[in-house]
Image (cartoon, rainbow, N blue to C red; front, side, top):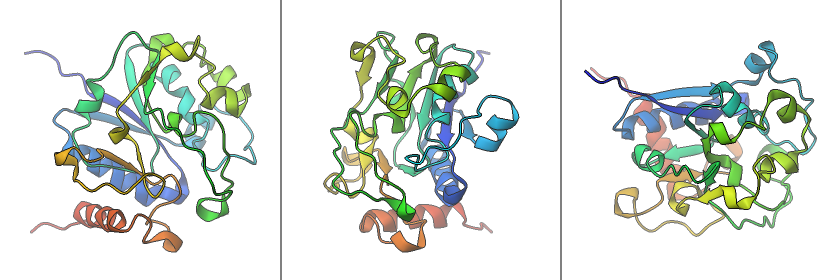
Length: 238
């Protein structure tokens, strides 16, 4: 009987967004047609392993702003892995995204043209504009091509070097992914079709989501969809 390789997914974890992380994980499992190996990137654990020692940057809005770049190291620089922010909701089979892997590239992502008009986002965190904004929020990583991302590099490189993919040889090593795999809620136009009818497959509350008391309606009916997914995950079956 052939062995089954679970799809490796790493999720950026922030203790303020535990509810978001749990709902995202459940939504991934509920829609997936293949086994998943999901690992939240918990900063104190990485610090305890001697892999992360970087001081918090004033421009850093989440605990996982930089830990995401440790994924190739955690994979032993072998194979592919998927990284995603925790403030997302999956609405379709993640295998369809996984199947887009292309060995011509070192990384693949939705290549947004997001120039934020606001200066503050959730919980008063600073909104920092920079080229390739939100590209690193969801990345398919070809780990053998990401060997510049050593723990030393991740802990010492500037935020712009990391988030602008300077660890690759050039932009020609960044492959594009359909925008439906990283829909920016309340940044991009609200979707008019559900995921099964070619609507967004992954919703991303980059400005802060309904798990925060102050933003319970962020995204309108998409916020209601998130609460429905949360309630379904918590449902007690007889």
